[in-house]
Image (cartoon, rainbow, N blue to C red; front, side, top):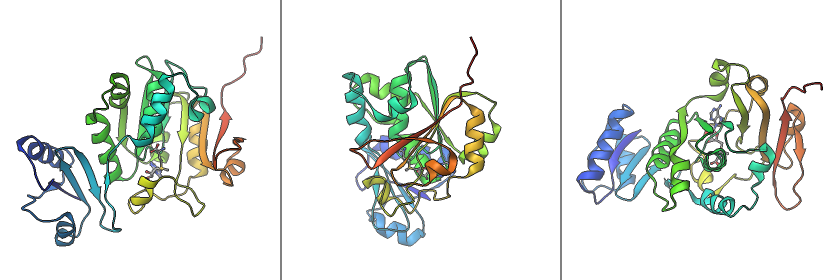
Length: 263
Ligand SMILES: C[S@@+](CC[C@H](N)C(=O)[O-])C[C@H]1O[C@@H](n2cnc3c(N)ncnc32)[C@H](O)[C@@H]1O
């Protein structure tokens, strides 16, 4: 992956692009009035553009570029602030002070909702295996200004790690997060979201493994939660109780891991 600036840049965005290249050990390339497509062809690599108004990626394969934007999470976050319900929060029975491990961060929408719900007394860690997506979302979450303080804070409070979830889960102690969450790419031939369709070339497409689910059950003090297409066989395959939502193609499944205490 190479890093460059937007077509028009200022000292600040130039420095930011150079900083990102240094931090992630990537090659920085001066834009020199070339189009992103030209740069992609010249360097035969994914291109990360640090513009004056945000960060975008143009993968080597495919024709789309994706800019970090909190998109759907903003709508959901505003609803939460009005005390309206959110399907993830309900499925996970997420409340202030809890800890939440997002094993499939993507563009971070679910992590932001979890972070807003658990608040400053809770913690959210998000894992992403694709370097280009990790970078886009990590930088986006840390610098995007939503103009709504609590939402911007929730974005900044997410701890973002470039990790494969199966490997990372194995390093964690038993019961070290209240909730362990998976939102894998759908197996059905439909896309999870418009933005993810655009960057499907760079999303990690490993199938969700039984080892990962078993590790998640050990790590989750309260629940393992799976979001998937309503027809997914993974709910049954891994023993999730599928919560039926008649109005949505996306369902949540839950495995309770809390040990019952006899009274
Ligand atoms: C459907 S997307 C998640 C969308 C996310 N919930 C959101 O709100 O934006 C699935 C993501 O999981 C990532 N992924 C797949 N397998 C992974 C693994 N083993 N470890 C970490 N991330 C993984 C993919 O690269 C992709 O970005």
